[in-house]
Image 1: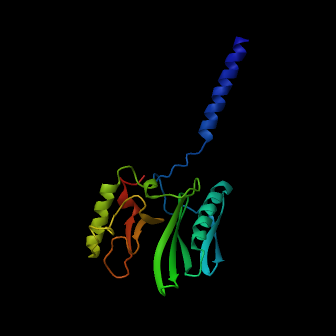
Image 2 (image 1 turned 135 degrees about the horizontal axis):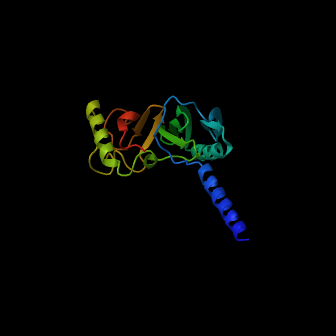
Image 3 (image 1 turned 90 degrees about the vertical axis):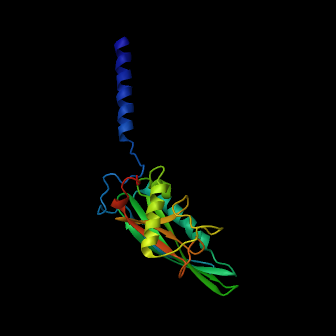
Length: 220
């Protein structure tokens, strides 16, 4: 009986160990990342009319558990552009990065303020971890404490571009911070800023690209 108990315990340990090994780690990382890796999800282009707004968006196919989360997030985003009597939207999109680590979508949005007869153009983006289907924020792709190094790199880029930003006041340029918008191409990370986000030039939009390998040390 004692031998049987030992045998059962051994089998239980082996079973638990095997199950632990089988569980996939879905944490996002750039380690061993290959930009040319093939896509693991596919895109189907769709368009929806929402009370006068025309919204183009992608529907993803692939691993069911993963794409269900992705499509749910996209649908929630799309529904924010429902039109009404005072304003409508025209939304276009482009999948700018897609591989075995992430899918990144850049949206170009035109808001038609019919009450004031003003059209405003701006951008938004959604980037997914294709291992679990979750949307990623800037903290999900950079290591803890990334802000100082990334802000220094941002300031260098702004100087290279010969641009100026608001350094004080309500519309102070925040650089790299929680909520900073970005999208990812297969070999680069692009931070972007819309009107009213501390910019003092032209149409008030700024795109700051970084080659991914140049960020080694602060990316995950």
